[in-house]
Amino acid sequence: MAKNYFKRYVWLIDTIYRNGYISFDDISRKWARCSVNEAGEGYLPERTFFNHIEAIRDMFGIEIKCDRSRGYYIANSDDLEEDGIRAWLLQSMSLNNMLSECSNLRDRILFEEIPSSQKWLALFVDAMRDNKSVEITYQSFTNEEPYTFSINPYCLKLFKQRWYVLAKSVATKDMRIYCLDERMMDAVMTDDTFRIPTRFNAEKFFANLFGVIASEDNPEIVRLRVDADQVGYYKSLPLHSSQREIETTDEYSVFEYNLVPTYDFMQEVLSKGPFVEVLAPDRFRTLVHAYTKAMLNRYEQVD
Image 1 (cartoon, helix red, strand yellow):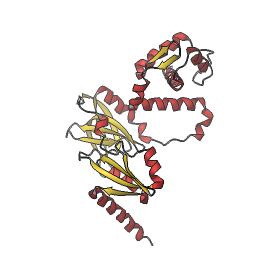
Image 2 (cartoon, helix red, strand yellow):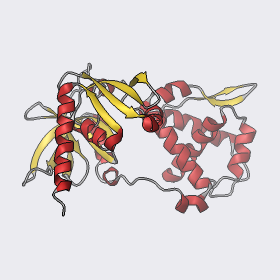
Image 3 (cartoon, one colour):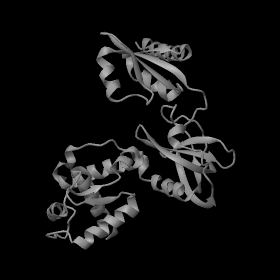
């Protein structure tokens, strides 16, 4: 029954969110023909509707209110869209609702699989909510043996189809990032609690970083020259929040970034092939050149 009600909440949130303003009568008519209405109710009882509104407020922090002339609406929609996790939740709800309504299209809508989300994600969400330490058994791809130790989870981040947890080691006090894939061999929430610093802000922590390498280096001005036929991709989906276009010609554009040029960022640049050139800083340009030269040497050795 709880699962059924959750589906109802998802449907109601999405229905109001997509319509902007909608009357109760229109909501009720939509309910009568939606797939979530498994009992085949001819209308949505008004008392049930108001109970759902209260539950949605308590569960998701979403305020549904009524304008007498225009109908029901999400009062804090601007706050939700600025809140990354709740915006993602709304988008996920909307997609889930659309798929429910069009179940015959399920095999024609393809997703990227995120294997790590199933096993450990809920545990770390619970641990962060309750400020509980987690004892993990972890074996990185470069270590021969796994290690068991306790961490205090600060935040979660999704990057290239993998979930990562940023955490402080209880023993060493270092801030590290651990992946929730097969490297996380075991994880158990303990009874030990911790206090996250009031000054900690996950978005600010990663503001000068690309990917999931928790570098303490200072950010630098990085410039990339991008071939003209690739520029649209950078404008439509910037590599980093600091991206800005500082030069444009018929042949190329130059984009500037203020970030730490970590290994993750170098991999991203290398993935663009010959269509992107690092102009600055010199140290990063030299490093990328060394990697491209090593790649060329490997292919030249092929008979």
